[in-house]
Image (cartoon, rainbow over all chains, first blue to last red; front, side, top):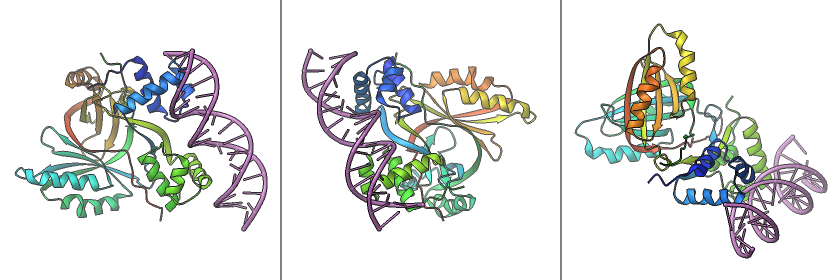
Length: 158
Length: 158
DNA sequence: TATGAAAAGGGGTTGCT
DNA sequence: AGCAACCCCTTTTCATA
């Protein structure tokens, strides 16, 4: 399950999250190991699915998506059947960055990035609120990002 | 501001977000351009800060962080002075992945990843709720991730 | 000034010890 | 697990329009 991560794996993962463009020899040096050893660890971690992908992170406003919204969505109580449709729709909206089901009275929390407030209004009325089974949406515009990372603090297993 | 992104830039950014390990020649082929042209675009976009960093994304449960929590934090109304301290603390908690200030009655939304529910209880009581000025915390454990990406749909400016 | 080609350098990959 | 050789990709430079 937590695919047996030892201290070396943890160090590698933490460094690569901070900067995936770090050359293999520098990485090896920082973790006090050799190129090949580190390279094989990375292979294993990728095959095991611990490393999901290599990507670049963009500055959202500079990429033309200056507005971040968190929407709390509640579904009609008797609309179990419309859930697969909701999920399908939400996955295909490029504006939706994340969507999670929550325990408690909120059914979904949805993280959305759009160009500006007008674009959100458009998205809200014509897209999100139009999905069958949606009962209530409470939208909050995010002001300042106090913290916004993708880095997980990986610790050795056990 | 939205650093003048043309169609070629947009294509490059979208492809690199999907897979940053894509070799330059394949990337060039996909966007119907040449290696050097694409390479210079990437340089420019990095210098302009549109591309913030290269990273790897981990499977959180496989990396030993199986529990995702969204916490809504409200501060005491008269505790303006304690905000810098709150921000500083939150930024230094490795469990906190994101924290945004919101318009409306919730002051902060905090996204947290921990090993298990016990780890969250520990984090909640000994860390988050101990920060000066915090009045109320409403924690929701996330069940299923309907969507969880970092990819922004980049469109040409204008 | 921007583009393409081609050389030079560095890093990823592999096999062997 | 480490070493070293190989090969491919990135990066620079140069020539061209």
